[in-house]
Image 1 (cartoon, helix red, strand yellow):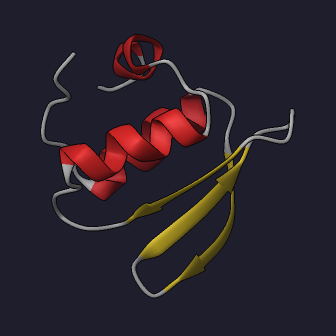
Image 2 (image 1 turned 90 degrees about the vertical axis):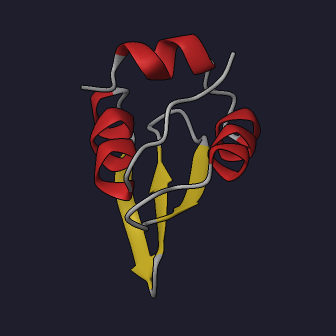
Length: 72
């Protein structure tokens, strides 16, 4: 499934709706953690690269369709 072009702010908000909490931010990268221990790191840019985002979601075992349901 192809991801839409999203901003870092949209990605952050969707992950927060999925239960992730921001634990660290340095430069343009945000690290978030879920209560069950999953972690995700992504670049907080105006446009987050689709390939980068898909890989980050895969690493954090977040289903792409579930993620897209939380994007507004």
